[in-house]
Length: 482
Image: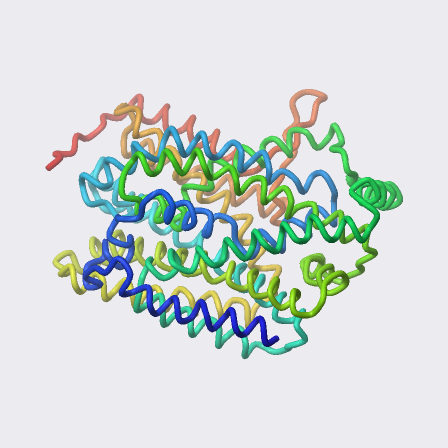
């Protein structure tokens, strides 16, 4: 507990000091919400990694592998597919956003297509998809605090009050600075784990043998090798997750805070180092099986494994690294959601004449509301709601991809086409998810063959077809560019 508190105090101090780092005018939204667009390759690498690889990743990926085996590794191909996508698409988006002072993805849509209702729909999609994501960071923090023997909600509330205060004061600079500490700590924890734990369990051969024996006894769609019936679900989950990943407000905020398109490209080249880390994190699920860890909730697997293998001081260090891995993305997510609300809902729909200083003040206030909304979510609703809604969030956020990505490459899509495609995608994706009991996979039957597919991909395909067909019969309204 002493080690845990010491590192928590360290990042709290860093959070407040960050306002003076790369100092800017915090009464301007691009300074508070995008760090003044001045982050170079190193800072951006830590920042993007910090908000992409979260506490929930460290807790949930090994938990899934512990529960179902090979199927839980879909996160690996997903994080391999995503970086060529970032390399090709995001520098182009960055250039337009920088030239026209866009702060959000919905800003870009408004700049290209005009109007206020479709950009508002894009903004609402981003905010709603982000809320359960923030709540899940709290779940990760809750799990590690509980593993230290502390019960009740008070430690979680204290942690997020601190987070709220330094995010309010320092904006995006706070998570950017803390991301350095967080990533270094996570790397130390994972490298120590993949060396020490297998050594104590008789080597990796013993780990895989124990996992294989466990899953064979368990039966069903589990195992250390994918079943043929899982191939399409695994592949479509990986592809859909990759396409959705950088549509979220927090990842887009991290990209748009870079100081150049070249920085974005270089990050896409270097970020796969995190994929190696993720693969090692996933293996903790198998190690827990080999160590004989038994838990009532799969999300407790990693803390239980560390408590079994490591001395208490290292358990405190590992718990601190995971808790800090919740703070960084939660801060960026709340900033991204606040930017969307202020720029694409409040300004166009409520106060078109808002001053830049009032805009920044409004975003700071909304970032507090978003964080405390997520906190209430976790305190008063079962965790399962956050997990289920986060699965839906991935389906929803995927539906803004045509409006943001396709329009970078073609001028033939119309506002009615994109709007109707988005709406149909949202309705179909939500309906299929509800039919499946909020599970992410739906089985498509073609003749006698059955193909389980990620619902987000099914909805996106329908979205694209509707967008193209409607755009073919409706004119695209030209927008005068400054």
